[in-house]
Amino acid sequence: MLIYVYVNTNLILNPLFLFYNFILKDGAFMNLEDIKPLKTLPVNKRGLDSHCKGVLTIVNSKKNGKRIEILESLSNELDLEDDIQIGVLGNGLVLSKSLPNVSQHFSLKTVGKKRVIYSSELVKEIIDVLNLSFEGRVSRTLRGIELEENQGVMLARVFEEGDC
Image 1 (cartoon, rainbow, N blue to C red):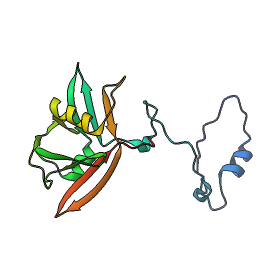
Image 2 (spheres, helix red, strand yellow; image 1 turned 90 degrees about the horizontal axis):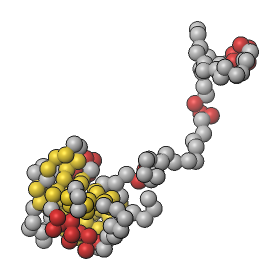
Image 3 (cartoon, rainbow, N blue to C red; image 1 turned 90 degrees about the vertical axis):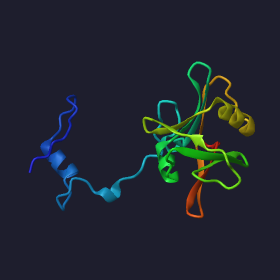
Image 4 (cartoon, one colour; image 1 turned 180 degrees about the vertical axis):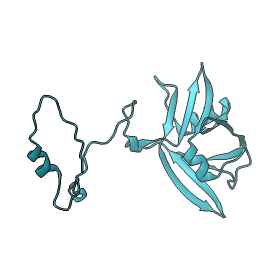
């Protein structure tokens, strides 16, 4: 049985050292039960922890337009097709195919894997209602999510998450 090990060319390793330190008694290369997790969380290019993925992004750009982008996973969870209803509950937005007390339907476009609502008036109203600041930026991503089923239809409440 051959074992390939990356060796730093600056080190000279004894074959017996390799044998006794990397091959366990039962022939396994590693004892998986001895693996310990690292404390550091992965960080993406924007400096956010990777567990802080957003579910909805509000884009408020003079140059590239105003829109609401819904992440693919949320779109799938809500089983969205051609349109969506949006309401406000507390400090967040409620999204679904069908909401009680809401009559407006917003058309959805597919851009890549995201579902997008192009409506400058909707973006302005959401910014006002949720009191969002766009100082020094053109987008805000809502990362908090609560899902609930109501009469066979999924509802999602999305909100800003303070920890991310």
